[in-house]
Image 1 (cartoon, rainbow, N blue to C red):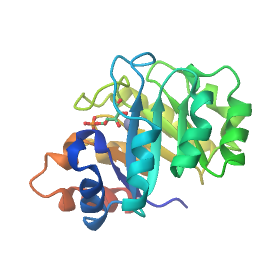
Image 2 (tube, rainbow, N blue to C red):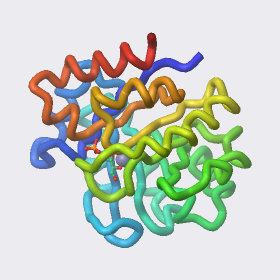
Image 3 (cartoon, rainbow, N blue to C red):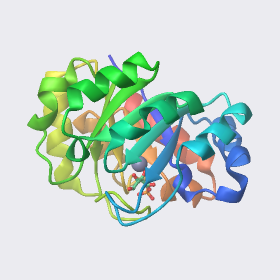
Image 4 (cartoon, rainbow, N blue to C red):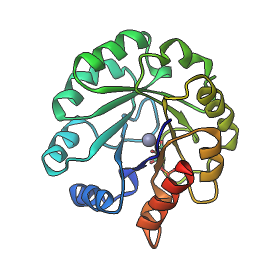
Length: 216
Ligand code: DX5
Ligand code: ZN
């Protein structure tokens, strides 16, 4: 059985206060800190890279769930490992040799995740699933926070959960209190949310409702 892990996306936080925002989220019940890395090439937006993770690392013990929306993810494994990332999640669409990349991520001491965009079929993941620590099913086109959840992506989550009862399946994009039940029923257990947590009157209540919906 898998359990809920709630991962606020720091993309919706005040970057000028990143360390405080991370600690605030952990104190409100977050399990993971989801860090969105964008290179302006794989996606049309720029955010942060390994130098920021390195600066942040001494200020938090939180699990840094790094989601790399970048071309050539291979070139950043060493930097993220030495910066102190806990999980390195790359996009299958961005790499030619996913198997070698997963091995390298593990060899450098990080957990390995693989992400798929909304148009990528779920069977692309199967040959790698056994050696992955987490699969990320995107529920929006990667690149920006604040977009609408795509319910059609739940078929992929259902299929994955059927095949891999113990796999950590993460969903990312537009998750909120309206659609969490659908995502949880489909089998997602790692819930990324930016806008719905950071804009809430009570982020703590949202985190706890997410957890309850997944675990019930
Ligand atoms: C989008 C990012 C997400 C984003 C989610 O490309 O991968 O992690 O921050 O934000 P919301 O929850 O606002 O859709
Ligand atoms: Zn993300």
